[in-house]
View (cartoon, rainbow, N blue to C red):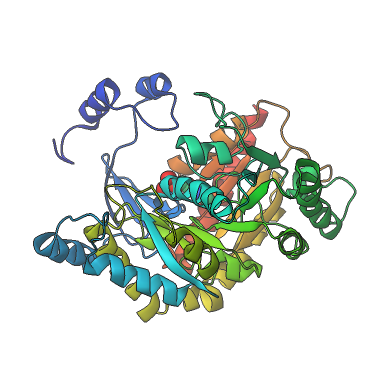
Length: 454
Ligand code: PLP
C-alpha cells in the first residue's frame, strides 16, 4: 500500500480492519474515511490530492507545524544510540533526565519534577493516583475525592475518563470510578442568563467552594481543570473565574491540577496556560505540544512539596514507555525549536493578536453567536438566534457536523463540538494563512446556513 493506492481500496481496507476512536465505525464505513497521506507546514494532503489548511494542528498538537526534519533527525539519532530503555527500578538515561531538567526550567514556580507517561490520559491517571497517595502519605487517607468539571476532557482511560465530564462520552464501560465529583464550567454564552460574564464567572467558581463544603473539606484531595477548556468547545472563562478558584484552592489547602495538555507549549501565548490564566497549580498535565505530536509522550510536572512526599515512599506506578528515549529526544528538540525560533513569543506578540482581530469578525456572521479566542485556541457558537444566545433546537451537534463537513469540502479542517466550531492551528501559521482560514470559515458558515434552512 502507498499514497498511490486508489482511495476506494484504502477505504475498503480501513473499513474492514481499522476500528477508529470516537467514531461510529459502521457509519464511517458507509461513507469512506478521509485518507491523509502527507503534510507540510500547516497543510495536509489527502489521497485524492486535496490540500487542506489544518486549522486544528492535528489534534491540537502539531505546534511547530508538519515536516520539521530536525525532529525526524533527532528521532533517527536517538534510535541508533539507544532506541529503548526503561526508567523503572533505579535506571535512567540521558534523554529522560535532560527533558525533565528542561521542563523544570520552563515551568513556573517550584514545578521542578517530572513523571513521564505516553499520553495525556496516562498522565492524568498518574495524577489521580499521585494526589490520593500524597494525602495518604501525609496521614490524611480520607482525602480522596477529586473535583473536576462537567464538559471537561482529561482523556480516555478509565481514570482520566472518569475525571472528564463531556455529555455522551464518559458513560460507556462503567465509568466514572468512585470518588470523582463534577461541578459546572463557566460557559457564559450558553448558561449565563441575565448575569454579566464577571458575575457568572464568580458564581461558577463558587460552585467549587460549595462542593468542598458539601463533601467535607477534609475529604477533598484535589481540583482538576483545563486552564482553558479545550475539547468541550474551547470555553474561555470570564476574567473573574480563575482568581476566585485560586482563592478557594488556597483557602481549603486542596491540590490544584492544571490539565495543560492543550494549553501548554505556546498555545495560549505563554509556555503554559496557567501563566496566561494567572494560576499556581501543584501539578500540570502535559502531552500533545510537548513533542508537537511527532512522538507519543505526556507527563506530570510536579511541585516540590508533592514530589517530596511521593519520593519518600515507593510510588507503584509507571508505564513501559515512561520517559521513552526517542520520544524524549524529539520533545527536547521540539522545545529547542519553540524557544530558539521565538515561536511562543511570536504567538503572543504577533500571530495571536492578528488571529484574534480576524477571528472576531466572524461574530458579524448571522449564524454566529460568539467568537472567542485566547492565543491560538478559539471557538464560535452557532446559533439560530443571536440575541437570545440560543443553541439550535435540533439534536446538539447536527448543525456543527454540517459545518465541519462544509469546511472539509472547502479544504479547511475545523472541528465541531456539539454546535461549536473550534480552531487550534499550528503556531507557525502565517498572516496569509490566517486570512485563508477566515475566508474559508466564512464561506463554510454561509453554506451551512443555507443547508440548515433547506
Ligand atoms: N487532557 C486534555 C485537556 C486533552 O485535551 C486531552 C486530549 O485531547 C487529554 C487530556 C488526553 O490526552 P491523550 O489523548 O494524549 O491521552
